[in-house]
Length: 283
Image (cartoon, rainbow, N blue to C red; front, side, top):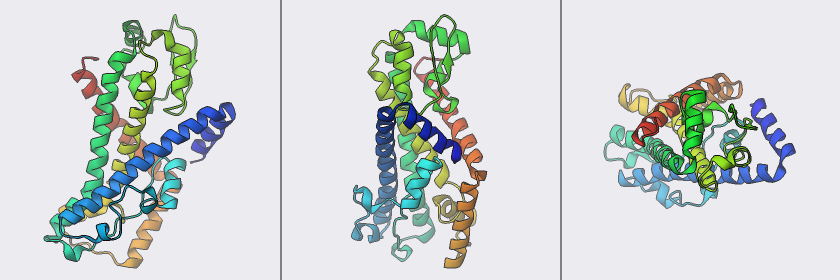
């Protein structure tokens, strides 16, 4: 948590304009991803017979109807967060376990779909962004070129025969640094901004999907586990929900879950990235 805050402070001090642009992009991507996640819950609930979310205006794209202040703050400070849970009345479901599963998995499915689409598009953009000379240098220096598309590696690139390097920075802010250091090796430098936006979309949506799959109440993963393996047998009262929610917050704030989430997201991202790099003929 503190390292992320220190990184924000360092970026703000180094280049306030670039930092504000980065935050604008980040806010936009997070809002977009959280809103679609929550709207997916409400839409599937409606299709399963429960109009509660629609009647309360939760199928709206208005961010104010979805954002949870603490969850949004955690997204920026910790790197993951949540929105207000969509109100659902299970009594309206046609089949409780089946429909509860569909509603629970809906938001995660949307986030994973955006993640996969963003990674694929970023790989396609990569073919038009870099010159063959740059790709050859990457292959020679690192034995691979997917480091250009993997934000989990950190943007620390130094090449023999090239002057300058790119230090670790935020996904959007590193666009300035990469153009400054390697602009001559780019076919269309403006594409770096398209690619950075796609990478930010991929990272945020993958983090949301993995985080929400954790089997902790009130996250979607708890409902998925209960509806499938536990066959709906686990019922928690209000007090137990509060206790498990508090425990989840403790695990997040102490950093216990941070390393687990980073391990899961970085390895899953790399696996998907390598598949798309091969499909686009870059590996």
